[in-house]
Length: 245
Image: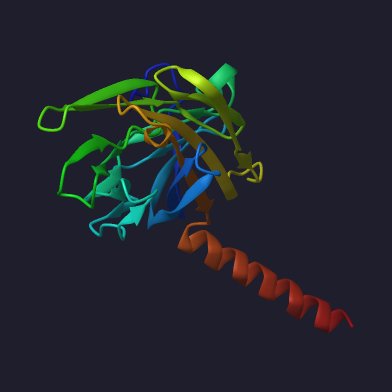
């Protein structure tokens, strides 16, 4: 399904959009500590698919700027590496969790997970495994740390992931995030998709496991020619009303 149009309706029209990809992190075992989010903005032209789906081009949302370094505590730090961007993908009815609206739209880029000080002092880089199903695991042999990220597909519905405190044991924590579809029948308007992920490492402490969440906020707007025609039509209606009055 990754980046594939197999079994999906054909593209029927171009659909300009502007949007933002927000990457946020929550450490549930330290008083639900939140790292300030990273926001990647962009514009592009999506493909409108029959049935309400959309296909997004690669790198419509991209950045070459790293986020400021943020600390969970004096031992652990996390920051967004660069460059980061979306790959091409398709979001459509039936492609999300439980047959809902959504699908896989992977990201490039990485996070830097630092121990005992900011990167590059003993750190491990792990991929932004957001917007896709499965997991990826990275080992930093120089510090003996392995980080595993388990991801989910994008959805406009409710997505829930669960995390235990350390080594699969201890106090469980649950993160629930919700998307929405505010588009008109013509496909214009706002589409909000979410994709939570779980980050685990083999560090023997409660602070090493945390949640990552991607929020994809897309606003589909009329093509310039369509907007111009709509504006001329409204202007004509105003003039007609003035004449009749």
